[in-house]
Length: 575
Image (cartoon, rainbow, N blue to C red; front, side):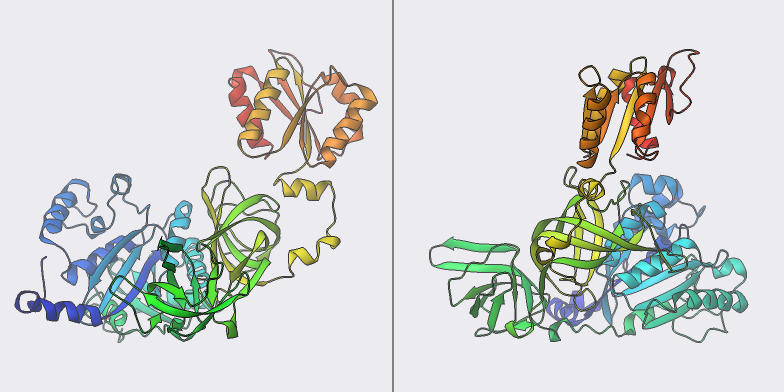
């Protein structure tokens, strides 16, 4: 390393003991594109002497090759290691770095500023205690600044450093600093932050990063590193009721049966009573087993194996809790949801909900409202697009155990997984349980809309006319099937007139997308049976052939092969 403690050479055991006793702070850097997040962390690592000799040599070479600072060192390259990041000069993935000072240990997450990578910012923020929100002094508060601030508040971060960066480019003017600070405080007034610490910095030059800068005599607060070393972030997880989700049932032989997991909250001792929240069965802890031997006490954050005095049924995904203060156990609850996928959320579509080690099929029953990240106002909407945030009601196929996210981040959070692709599509924070879905099924209204919502789609008729219409209908059905839509293709050769109309109505009432290939004349005869928003004619034109006036979409073979046309119409009709 470029610098190391004298204790390493003189007394390695004392050094390790010192490191063990230091407190750990997790923080993130976030903000808009090119606000200097990676450069700031690189500067922190550089100035705190936490760069290894081989890293230093590599950094100097990389700065000359792909850096953005001319002959000077580009500190951002300490974090941006992917080839695509270096080529574009941006951050794409979350980069974690560990460093320490004489007072504290740190784990920092450098998160991307581009809107399309907001999902990676949520990942980094989910375990952070402090957020450093960077703002370019030239640009002020931007949309992505607001989005990241709201997300930081959403995941439970209560301490924020407002690092107004690139002050050297605005001549270190106090007026500009105060103007940005006033704008941000007006926006963040309702976000619930316990502290907003404004610091004027120049990450590139090191102003107010490690030591106070003479360029800002009007700023009397601490530099960034001093604040990070001294900020008090209360961690009351150990004082909360005991919670542990079982990750693995350890049964190496007939004489041992232990339940492995990380304690999410509270403390546990041998002899303490615990309850399985799914069944209500109770027992007492016999032993707290670890690799280093049995413990007399285990605290939140420790990974342990518990053995019980009684043989009771416990499986992976079950939650052990103190009987006097049990978590909620329900299959219907309200949560805030951050959507992380290009394919939008559609209420009624089935997903997998994963909360800790517990997984269950789930549906978003209703989208109550979306949150506008610019104004923080509630907006109505039928779906959530990529990076949008909303409050939803969710229903699971089986009850799960949880706390409110405000009470416990570990047991109040979950992710949604697409059942076809296994992609993580959403991250959620539970507010509260709602009426148990099993107790109000009698009040559910069963209709065409509810059946379609259950399939995550809208019931529609797609009538294909023109040359090669049959082939286009076949490929469209295959495309719909590949993305999880429920569709049925009919042939007019076997159904005509009243029989055709009645069959289509039955399939629509079942919530299906109905595909039919027939003539334009036949479409005109049957169109009046359906509403304008449920009947769509797609005409495949050839040459100069005139297209029907009422066709919702006119395609030509010149636009591509049938497979390409099928993908296009699915996209344009938002199926």
